[in-house]
Structure formats: C-alpha cells, structure tokens
Length: 298
Image (cartoon, rainbow, N blue to C red; front, side, top):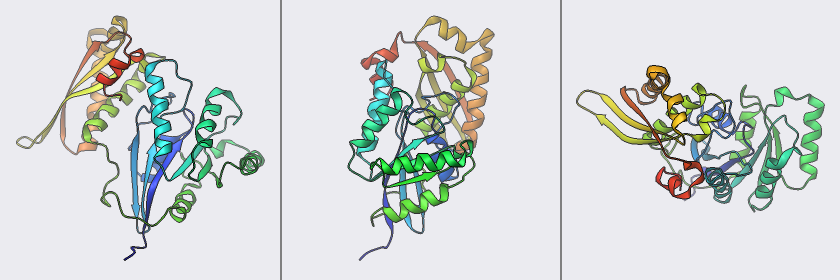
C-alpha cells in the first residue's frame, strides 16, 4: 500500500561562504548548523530533517569546497564529495560572486558534473544582485545543460526558499519517513555541543586562529538527580602561542568563550549546564591524518 508521501536526501554543495548552513537553518526554522562570517566553518556532514504532510527531506549540509592545503582541508573536501554521492538531488549553491571566479568554483563544478542524480542551481543572496544580472546568470546556467532547474533565493530573508522546498517535494520519489516527524537532525547532543563551542571560538578569535582549533567532548553527562548537564571539552590548538591567546589574560578569553557557549547550550538542552573547557597543544594536528582520526575527523 502506498503512503503518498515522498522522502529523500538533498545535498547542499558549494564553495565556502555561499550560505549553505544559513539556508539549512532557514528551511528548518531553527539553528542546526553553526554559522559564522568566516569561510570553512562547516567541517562535517550536518543533516537537517524537514518533515511535513508531504513527506520528509533530509538536507545534508557540507563543508565548503576549496583547494586543500592541509589534511584537515582534504578531509572536508572528501566529506563534501561523499555527500554528493549519497544524495537523491544535489543543490549547487552560488552567490553574488562571479560563477567563473577562482579555483574553488571549478572544483565544485567538477564534483557536480560527476553525479548522476538531478542537479539544481541555487543563486543565493539574490537581494544583492541586480535583477537583470540574476536573469542572465539563470539563463546561462540552464543553457549549460548541467542543471534541471534554477532558483534565485535569499537564505537570509527567506525569499524564494518556500518555492525551492515545494519543488524538491515534487521531484523526490515516494518513500518512507527515515526519521521521526519531530526530529530536526540526526546529530547527537555531544556533536551539537562541540559545534556550539567551536562556533563561539570562531566568533571570539580573529584572523586564522579558529582554523587551527578543534574541539572534543571528553564528557557529556545528564544528571537526572539535580537536572544539570555536565560537559567537559578540550580545545586543541597547534602552537603554545595559540594556547595563550585562547586562554587570554588571566583566563579572560576562555571564560568569555565558555560563558557564551554555556548560554547557547542551555537553550539547546533546556537544562542548566556546567561547562568545563581545557586547552591543549597538538602540534600541527591539521596536517596529520593520525591526529585528525584521533580528533574525530574520519
């Protein structure tokens, strides 16, 4: 017996900072993926689950595709490639930058062109682009023969997003609900806690330092007796000098990061959170496959 509902996996691919995570959060109506002004914030596969009367779409947010210079960057690109291969539809997000600009966009197109599932172009940040430029870029995209459809949207304001989701429901095949209708993600709270801490590090620390930082959750314990969630996390850096910056004068920076993360975690968990942060040095961890595996990047 058929259910009449559709389901499937939709990949969000593109170069860094095109708005993939912002689009995911907009569709879900809740913040699942961390967002910062800095490129290459997303490092892992992040699944967002959208369910309504029509069925269920699992959106797979991916790291921005870029030329890898370190083992960490290569891991991120491999993750994006894997997401493209496990999806039923691939959305190629671009923004107001030139589509012919730079090595990153060439890499994205190389991945897009190698998948056999339907590909759609999503022109994000269209509120920054003159209307005649939008029409020209959409026409060029369709004439390329790569894309089934094209969509101008603004993930920030929501313009065009509902139409995009409506179209995806029409294109996906009939199938079961893979997750409960109440689920918004398949990520465990340990992972969400790690990402929230990392987001605060990106916001609080300037320049290149956040790219040399990893976070691991050493302990995550929900205590039913007192209603407190206890989290112990380690912040990994590559240099002793970086450790000093993260800790700050008399521990001020680490305290600010911890406070911001704790407030966010309490919103996410609905419980009082006791958060302990520690900083350690793992020299050149971003260049070492062994270190990456130990830190959870596999």
